[in-house]
Image (cartoon, rainbow, N blue to C red; front, side, top):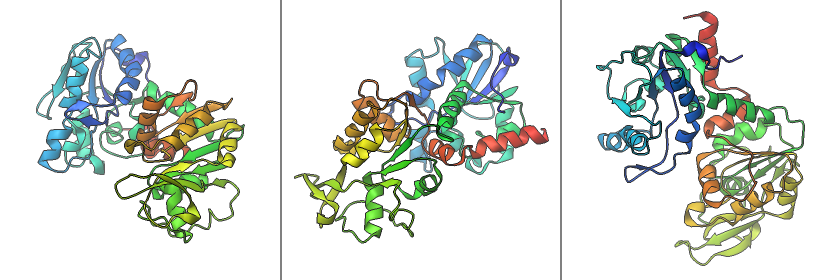
Length: 377
């Protein structure tokens, strides 16, 4: 059993690991979905008169130029300009600063990935973070597949709890672990290698694979996909003749300038770039007749306006009478732009974490934190 936040945390300095790894464009937050989803946990802690120290990563900074782009001051500006918490959020730039308990104050730490050792779960770094709080709350579901210093390591030094967002994610995604109804999972996007484990282990009746993922399978099977994006996969024996696997056979193909679209069967493609998947009746029927549906990854290159395949997924999900969920940054952004009425019951804030949870039923950082609880600090 995981420990969730409760009244025991009242009047304490609480370090909260959130996942504010949001899209930034021209120095502004482009999509605040993950920030908004953290609000329930943070408002509860404020109601307990806690001081809150927020930790998050932002992007994958490597150069000094990256550090200018990925400073969490961008998040700070968003929180203060929108008056997100109804009070000022203060900034902590390094470990030379300190936080003395006042009650009801909020601080945002600089990007945790600016500090050496974060992604290697440096315990010395985790200990430095831990000095700012009395307890640690992890509400960063989208990062729980990573055993990093600010995600997991702090639990070696402080009493640790999970937030309401993590609770909501686990409760909803767990419905797919042992489904009691027919379950169809829809997978799209560019990369198939990241999802092979999920494809082979998910307890789904049907697995719809579209986008560049489908092209990677077809190419390995000897099909010509023109100049389309693909990934090399070593073995496709799992996909050949498997009645669970459903692949589109028709695709939208354009020229090198993404012009002159035409619909072609996979056997007719000889050149050009595939930009969208056309869902056949078998795929649509599988989705509509399902008792449960999960979708991750667009069916086409929606950034360039090729959205028909993804729109068809949403239209089909709207007809499903059972539980419907989606996950993944691109998929959520697509949903926000093209949302149909009553097509989704739950939107996961995770990307890789969501897929890994569906594959394994747990996440690496959760197991690390549980182990710290078991052995004692």
